[in-house]
Image 1 (cartoon, rainbow, N blue to C red):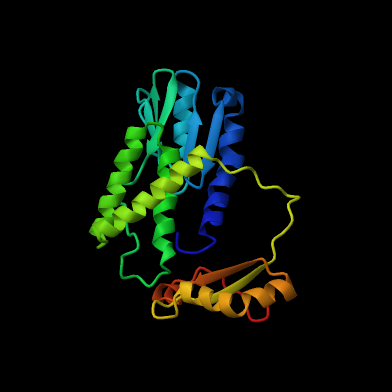
Image 2: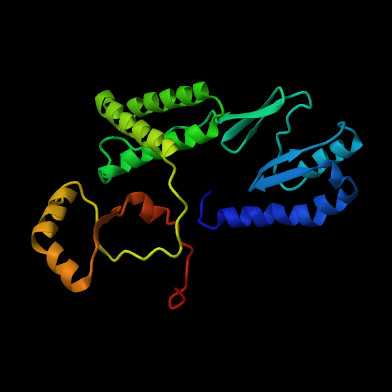
Length: 257
């Protein structure tokens, strides 16, 4: 949205209108709205009753504040898009499926991008897990997963490489579904970890080589003398042109950081 604080400003902008105009003006009709949720400029509400004068007034209040224009579905519609979901009434239940905006450019990481090797594996697994949770019907999950695969191919990824990554992700997802992780135990003892952190570069020493050298030279002394139980190699992304010309940090005067 341009700056790191844009979301907060947008929430305050319309939140003031909600508190000062909408809720006071419709206090008598609020019982007709059993459910109301808003995320920035996306509102999902349930209106209980006919689309009478109260509904028209509510429509007017939403569409006459600043430059915001709200897309309110027709009263006969049984489907609505909210954030990244399409919610549809089918019989006596609400069915969800993944919603993607028509103008979405799908700019996934290309294969030549200088990211750590495991980055794309995490991207694929994370999105497939999200799609599985978003889609009530397995057929919709399969459909969006195939589209995801095709869009990655269009970004230049080799199909054979993608098939292996997708297979690994599906196996991991199925394992998690069949063997859900127990909730974290706040009383569990902490593990002493040693982190080796560096900025990633594709021509640097591979992760496996770093781990091999550590195992052969430092693992036993660190375990015996410092009680180190786990060695973790962590990467941060290098500085990019985008991080220089479009910084996400809020400006702080000198001495106030």
